[in-house]
Image (cartoon, rainbow, N blue to C red):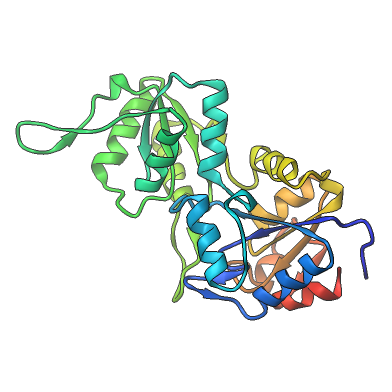
Length: 272
């Protein structure tokens, strides 16, 4: 089946184009051929561990030339949203340095922890207007408790992404979704806004960047509950590649069905 109206392809990164620091087989050739055919490409990541410049540099190094303007991250989208809607909020971030730096670069107020008399890092939950949860490999009890106390006192509850795990060479590791679930469980509250996939925020930004309506775009990713769900809800074409998190047994148990299922990314060229 060939599609005649397709104008742009939105690629997930981890598990779709690369895994760790290695490009997946055929990824460079697929992107090159799509560009040759006149397709517009956008690269989208929920992982908030690097900025758009770093992702573009990594893609280019792996043989997939990209510019920062072609990369969209969940942290970037959340930063833009908060800058436009609530720039005065004091943010407590469960996240790593890039998440904090990205939010700060948009003029947002990211609270810095201070040392008490015992040289322990502390922050007063009463001064927190919003908790932002992101992928954080330095998560500890102190951070979890500070977020809990702030949420119990009425702070807003935002997140960059809700992925339960992050694919890595050798196996997946816990992602922001695990932290969100823990905080929802202990506070009885639900996260108010998730900026990353499958959020309409990140999708809207992607379509605006491509300059195309959703119906002329295809979402290609390895996660059925985020990448494919987002594409389907937006009435996009969808292609699930089985090189990352989702396996065939997951599809059999899911009510989310992609338009195409690819064993490897080069199979995409048969559809376009």
